Length: 390
Image 1 (spheres, one colour):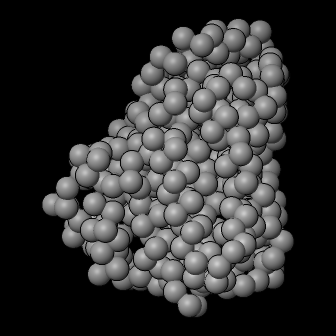
Image 2 (image 1 turned 120 degrees about the horizontal axis):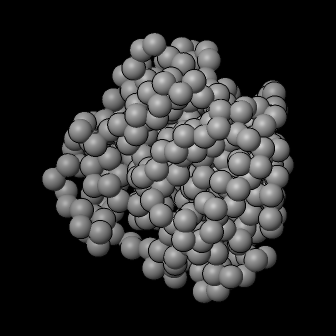
């Protein structure tokens, strides 16, 4: 196991009616805030009114910015940053899913940064330039990205057809409110996409060729089994609190840094490939991951990493018959069948994507060289995975 430092500063308020603590929690950090949210869902389910009531009770001044897109745009980041500067705001309260929280993080950086965050940070990856940000907090309404408990932000630039991410310890929210009841109004499509996204986050950290960090692997297998058990329950019965609660907490744990501690490497090829799909075609992130991931699994499986697939098959899917190759192949098939049970497509052509941009996307994915920890992949490898996913 490798050395590590574990420090998660985000305060989590989990469970029913935790939004009643929003005003007091916010006031610990700020009295002037930007209230950021998506379209109309939080107004339909009553969350908007509860948030406003809490802010008013504590005399917290707020400016609203709505309309955050599912793949949040750099234009919204810039607009929000200008609002924060103009109104001298101290904290951004994101009410929504991962897209809203990711957008809040971009705003938090741009509001304190003299240059352009898109070119310097999202594109050039000069994360050392992130030295000061506005504070961030969140009220989560969709279990998927884990952004409520990490320092990651992924933003799209639709003019350039690019989707890029940044990471900084300074971007971890001060606090996040996780009430599973607010995910009960999420439709089946988005529920399924969220389930796949959570599993993919775990896969990216679980699948590496090294055979160390035993404890981390077992933790991640437990998370995967939890999602596999409760995912279909929430999909069929959206009001099942126990299912929604387990999915929501697993989502946060999956990407708060804990699973990969002590591991030598993590992968993230499927995510980098999917970001290009989202950037070019604006598809739902979890759907893109659901299409790509099993194809990636089949492509990278070889004798150097089969032990990880065997562990996955035995410990997650309870496959114990056959030789190692049969177990590995069966585990990949089980993964695809699980995604299919949630109506996730198997091929890119099913969501209207052709091969016209594959070469361009493969070049962008590998622009800094080979990628991947499970298996090092170059331009030709990425291009082939896109092709077999078609």
